[in-house]
Length: 262
Image 1: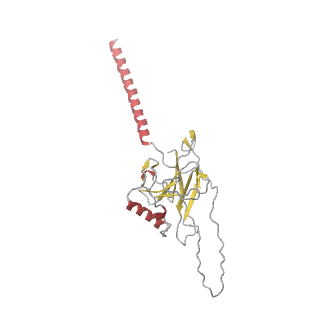
Image 2: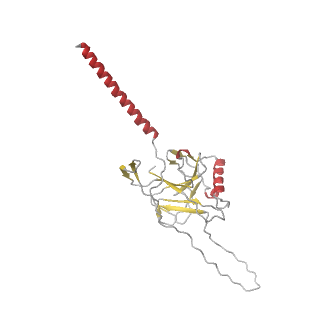
Image 3: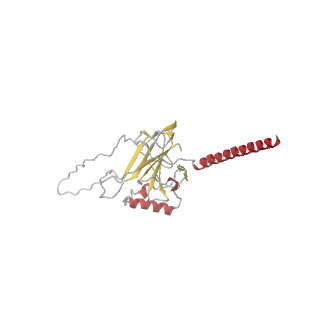
């Protein structure tokens, strides 16, 4: 009887050790997964709907007539539409979801408020989000913006990319799992109620870059139903450069990404 009992005890011990080992194994797998997948990268939106496209209309010439034999001294003032830049403004809706590769949803969560960022880039490939960066190194920042000026034929020092993103005061923010420190990115602030913003304000837009690529990404912080450039409410607004060459007659495509809830 003792031999049978000892044999039974050994079997029970082996079974117990096997179960404990499985528990430790699955616990390790779950822990490793949670420590690696802790932030979602920005994603391409599912739908982009054009609501309105607007531009300043052509203005007729001003008539000015003097008699022959006179010399007239005149002052002329004009506001010229800048075709070297364009803008996106609008609203964002979204949710968190658990989908499979085919887009089938097992569960999703509605968002009570919209926070995050909208990104625009000329890069047709998905950016390497883990390599995005800004820097406090003024020389490197100047080099990156100067390269963007060259790439987009922005040769006018008054309105080129370097002159437009000439502020370096912004709040810290995240791009996926990458933390961008405050006051490290070239920054522009679009207008509110047709008026420039002084200091830190709404709709901060930063020019960031990929360490592994040559493209600049423009990132704007979303503001939920905030008063925008024309007095209407928007979640985001941003300006992006167009090709500034005098011979350019086409339009530069930008690829949009959105990051919500982070």
